[in-house]
Image (cartoon, rainbow over all chains, first blue to last red; front, top):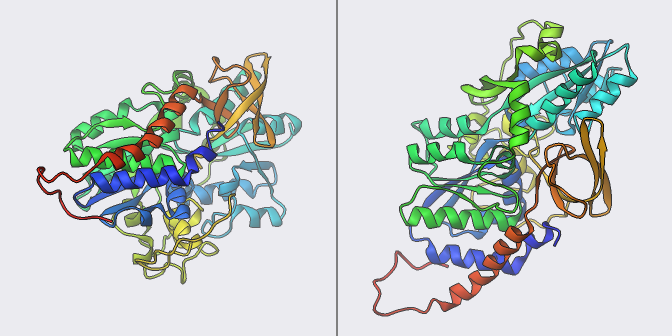
Length: 374
Length: 93
């Protein structure tokens, strides 16, 4: 087994689909939380294979999408400085701020580098002692252990010319916020598999109990997602609301305690602004005061940046599962991956970008698109 | 962004203060930080995200799930319409 191809088996997918059809008797609205899950669903057309009474809506779990425009503008202000080497994950470099994106800055002479791991930045810092090396530390709980380790190691090794621009978001407060909204339609969740590989799923249990919604922690391959749907639908049909784990090969209830420990040593929970959604209390990580010397925001003292988001864009409603991408008048017209107007179009994992990429330009356009593996 | 890819650990090196290793992803070999997965041995599969192994893939659990999915088909075929049971919520498919 390689734990990858096996979960794309067509025959097994048919088995699961048949079983979903067998157990489903009522209409249900399910949300997949992660951008990666959205991508798989749209790429393989899974939503169109399901009974038409099961609707999948797409959640807020794309960290590139929900990073606020102010933070992106701050990143660009820092990256443009001649004394800075600005490092970022590849997903972030083409995301436009109010004026430019990181690639445009690079073409104008800024030292912008794409890194595979935050640890790479420490080597860059050691090799360039005359420069300030800044890493754009975005992500959900999945990425926090890596970013925490980079800061922790920098402190251990006495590296002084390294800092991170933190824009970290947390899943459970966002899920709770969706369920609290008067507009909410979601009746069950496919939970975030890799976030839970780190955090476990204990913190979803009170949410499931309080809002009486099933939450099934789900993986990212087509079979994972179909099985996740089956497990949620079984619960809904039986009137249950529990946290279950579809992704047992990777996720345990307690998660990775070692990773959680280091994340808690380096970061503390604070309020966070989500692009398209607004501020959600206690939904992000900030560096603890012991590590403030690694805080790029403090180090570079970027002034408050006023930003203006598009008035047409409905990405906030898409992120909350209230609207679909093609409900937006700008979708595929003035808003496209080359010129995104808002959160859900800026990254390939955003719902709008995924719909655009796989040719979902209108409601009911159910043609399966043949795709190549990445 | 929260993408994590299964890789097979082919080498472990205990550097000062940091457990590192190399993992194979199909044909590609990458350096991986194993600091969060001290239990991992050479030959194990790990889920890797931005250069960090976040968890060891539980082979027994993977096989169990897979078997369950295979058996679903038999389950559906066992379902023979029963004239004595009340009608279900509607015809599908």
